[in-house]
Structure formats: C-alpha cells, structure tokens
Amino acid sequence: MKILFFLLYFLAITGDASPIPSLIADASSASSQMSDSKKKVCLWTYWSVYITNMIPGPIVVHPQSADDDLGNLRLTFGNHTDWNFCLHAFLRTRFYAHFYWKSRTAFFDVYTYHLGESYCKDGKEFFKQQRCYWIVTQDGFYLTKNPNKFLIGATKLHNWS
Image (cartoon, rainbow, N blue to C red; front, side):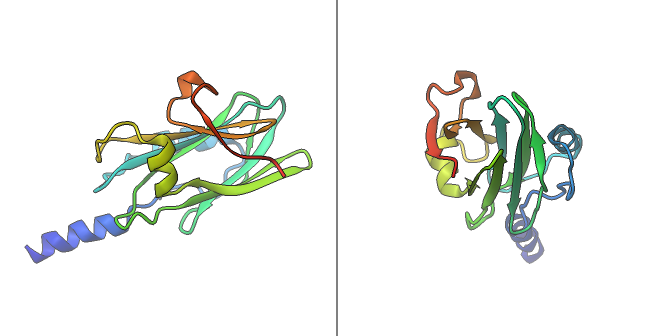
C-alpha cells in the first residue's frame, strides 16, 4: 500500500510538459513533434495551450516554464503552436511567454491555474482534457476556451508594449 501511495504521489508531483523539444526553429515542427509523442497519463487535469497568430506577417513566441523551454517559435499568419502538460498536484503549473512582432514585445503568463479555471475550463469535470487558446492580434492578446467563435467570447488580457 505504501508503494502504491508513493507511485501516485510521484506521478502527481512530476506532471510536467516533458518531453518537449528544447530547440525548435519552426512552430509547425513543434506541433508535429508534440502530437507524435505519447500522451501523458495525468493524475489531475491534462491541459493543452494553443497560441495562434492572426497578424499579417510573422511573430516570434518563446513559451517556457520552470522545467521546460520550448525555444523561439516563428508563427506566420494563421499558424499556431501548442503543447500539452499535466496539472501539478499542488496547482503550481505555470507557463509564460515572450512575444516579438516588429519592434513590439510582450511578456506574460500564458497558463496558470487561475487562468485555466477563469477563462479556459470547459465544464466541471476534473480529469477531462482542457484547452486554452491564445489569439494574437495587432491590438493585443485574447484568451478563450472556444476557438470556433474566434474573438466572439474571447477576453482581451494583454496589449503589445
């Protein structure tokens, strides 16, 4: 019984985004590498974060956490990058990102437990896969749980600097 408890505890505290490619030149390769990797078995909620560029022209996004660095990803108009991870047992999972577009920049959290619960969670099912969709536009950054409605129902949370 102690061994079973230890294994469950270990799975709960080590739920991270690994394996994530550490150096990725193009976002399309990030998505394909992530979709080819095995899905993680999570003790808690399984999350996916998507970042879509809706600016005519390329942007660079650099998402990372304390454990995983996805590198600089170049997104052209209409393209996206995404990654998956297990929610940490103590709700401490945090991903942040740097964004670069022409001479403008932005830096903010793209996933925290609060963001997920407030803007992305779909229903009350704890073990259901959840998704956050960031939409990058010329006037700022929008977060939604429903990408099919695009900016209708999305919440603007950040501006470019």
